[in-house]
Image 1: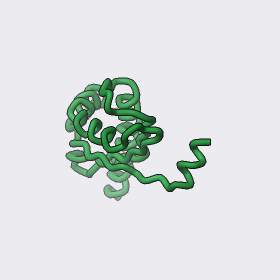
Image 2: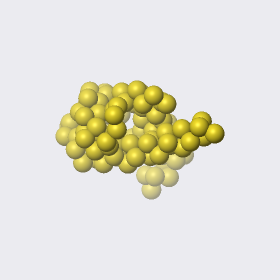
Image 3: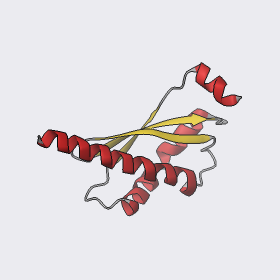
Length: 111
């Protein structure tokens, strides 16, 4: 049963990271290249807390590639802020992944 408890813990940590990352990206980042609405859709944390895959979606961005590059450049700052907000022994290295929304969903959101 320890495996189930460990998965549950990783899920809770992932959800806490998701909440905090959303706030950090929305309120703390000042990079002008980061445009549009950025949502953290999912966070997967490895069992050893060394890495966290951050899945994001970007809407209404002037330049998605520049936004992703800006987020990657800001990863150190984001990680530092995350360490301040979430009190754990290790703060994982952040790996950003863009989730792809279908064209139909994009059109529905633009209405």
